[in-house]
Image 1 (cartoon, rainbow, N blue to C red):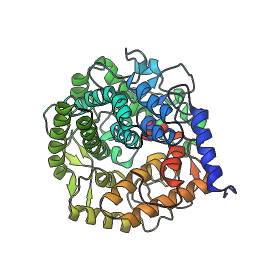
Image 2: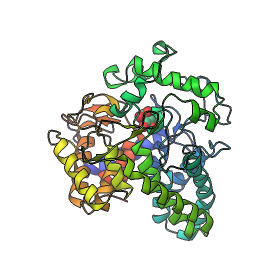
Image 3: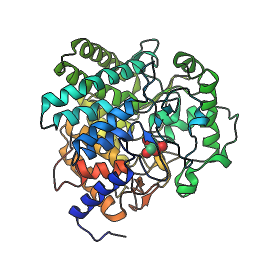
Image 4: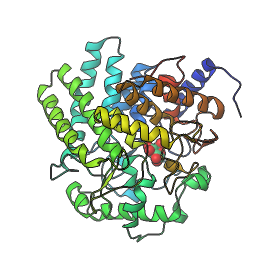
Length: 433
Ligand code: GLC
């Protein structure tokens, strides 16, 4: 049902959501459903904070990196304070870091968001001084991706768990997960289905498989190389590959400006290597980029939103970009709202279930940025107005049905509020960064 208040009051509402989800230096994605600090939610929410409380935005990066492991990994969840509203909590992960954390990572968007923060700062010199230790920490994390998760130096980084990709139950992971034999039964432990309609959440079978991978990580004491060698799930996720490429570029720019030339050179070298490897993810037959199952050597068949993140990374040639845009535009013609997380014709598409079809506002912003990078401000603007309409009609929900615009998943969601503040709530204009 349409909300009857105007854009200004929605902006107030978005700020109020961030304040309500603030736990003192970090923002929970959603108060009941996700009561800890999540890796990629945090910087994407920080840029929302920066619109009205820049100091609070910086803190978000500082608390997130307090969870960094000695090997450089920044975990996907930092459990700063106990809460029994979420499964799997710290005991289920069984890691030994303080503060307690999960044992896997998430898409590396922090550097890109940090650059935005510096670019928007009133005092650039002061911002670069505050950014300096963060640049060093984020580079250690990027190194972890490029080395621990790519021991052969192929230019393609591995994800060992679907939750690392951030698109937790995307259709892309069905085939690789089919190769994981469940050894646990966790349906009775799940809390997510208490907070959201089970029809909008992953299945029990899925949960048993993903928690089996967690058991594998625990078995090797979460040792990076050992987990890489052992995990029954090992894919190069097009999303992480692309976001890392973009983040390497953004971090290198910051590092040069912060007088860290060695770091900048390392980041630039990684970017060159990763860019060259992108040809392995391109399929001329589908006119799209795909994720790659590193255990079977097969490209995933599904075409999902990650194919557009390649544009955000500036990693497609002009011809590839034209083709991807054509594939996507044709494939989503039946959707009232852009951009679904999977093309509707793909088997396994589900308009209401999590990453299998719904629209995610923060993702639309990243994709819009990619369209702008390739000169398609018109498509970027369509994403912005669609996102604006979805939020106006259905509130600050976690995700939305691409056909009806119905709001789905969690409510009062932090990165949805941030996407409004930095982009969708603006009166006009193309992508924000
Ligand atoms: C879900 C999403 C993931 C996100 C988390 C917190 O698990 O799939 O991308 O980080 O919720 O919002």
